[in-house]
Length: 413
Image (cartoon, rainbow, N blue to C red; front, side, top):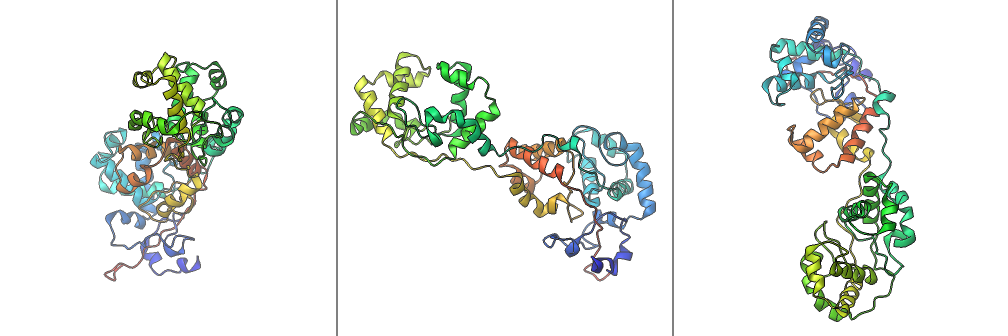
């Protein structure tokens, strides 16, 4: 740290006292860009003096405090804290709202009357404030359990019939392994609503929430697939011929390429036969399946079931969700360790409002807020990922830094 404080450019920089420590002197920030005085007009914010900050305070009190708080700590849902935020980032965001890049919102009307000098001073004032602290209210119930472990726990009541890991050992009971989670969730909801007729399943699922269904389906989707450990009466070779009409939806080897259509490879033969009989007799409602099943006699039903039971199941295309800490390793590359950005152009995330972080990540994912980098990062996020990431950064301690301006490329300061 001492080398930074002795930097000869510090006095010339006119750095806001107590704001940010940047460059190689910031622990773990070696990947952050160095800051040159001639890199952009937004870096003028790093030269703000006490008079600029005082004038910025007056601007903030008249234009910004109603939503963001006079001390930069927001009490308004969905409105971000600005205290201790990176100064060049604030200036660039204000300019974006003024230009309409962020779309139409209340912010546009606030910033349009302000000239560039006012934007610079408002940004400098907010950046000069002590950053917000984490609070129990802001992060309450923000820690989500591991969904795979939660799914395993919730699935404990399923293994008695469907077998450990979802591999059936009971004739007539379907294996749950090898099924796409989307299909399995849809099936559970159909049993719960009574669309699929099974009183025991309806009773067992009556108190299961949608979130728990998602976790159960994810757990089974990630298990190593294997064929059901049950007998399969019927002629497999004859079943392969009879199953030719099924390949278009269920795959030639019984592995479906459509999440809405179940894979049949390795499934319990008795269950497949029972399902086909259900479609024939109308106990299961699906016009396509009813027509196909109607053409099969009892012998053909057994043969088709035997064929699919003998096929090798495959794991569906489902990824194990990353933890918030694993996602944060990616986010920290730009936003700094634990969300404490060491680049004045990039926002700090530590101790930010939970609801605001969730809103912004959703906006980047949907394209409502534009950024090629953030779009690439957020495109693969699930709703639960977004909740977990936002909660992680909400819990982090916000830290103040001093930005040190390096000598410009031209040799002037």
